[in-house]
Length: 238
Image (cartoon, rainbow, N blue to C red; front, top):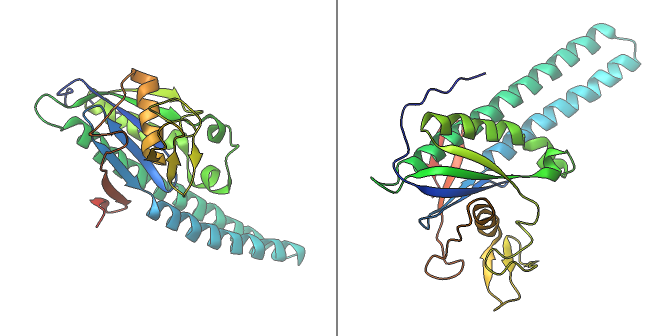
């Protein structure tokens, strides 16, 4: 377990809300109007690669056991365990890369506009393993939040968890039920305005945690800074 040593203090008193997910690992809204997106393509690629290899080995192990070949059976299961450990290590590496980049971005927002407090959505259903195949297997929520909290402590930034239920299904500006169509977009019946679903989730989390609602130049008119999280680091989306 890593220990965090504080190396800096917050530069300002801005607050941020984070909506966590799979395709977009983190959608982050800052009270100064910034919106950051961290994309999870590499996380999914790793998952499907290891899922396929592990499934084949488990099938071979089952056949070996049925055929009475215990030596092959135990050898195959040892390889399965090795691959599961490797997948877990690679996932954690991606999370730590994300956390390092994210926290530095939030801290270093100018001389007096850095973030001092973060509110992270707590996905109750997924945390209780009631999500779908991808959210439960790909996304180790506690591991991800732990990486964010550990890096935040180094910069003196406080992290609080916010109950997430309803943040994706209600408009951040009007607190009414929304429709989700087309994919990735929510439509609010009040004024028929639209928001990116990940932006809406982060706005709701920020408002629920801090009472702050970011307006931008118009409702939902925020342009994201988009990043890809990879094993070599975090880079802007082309």
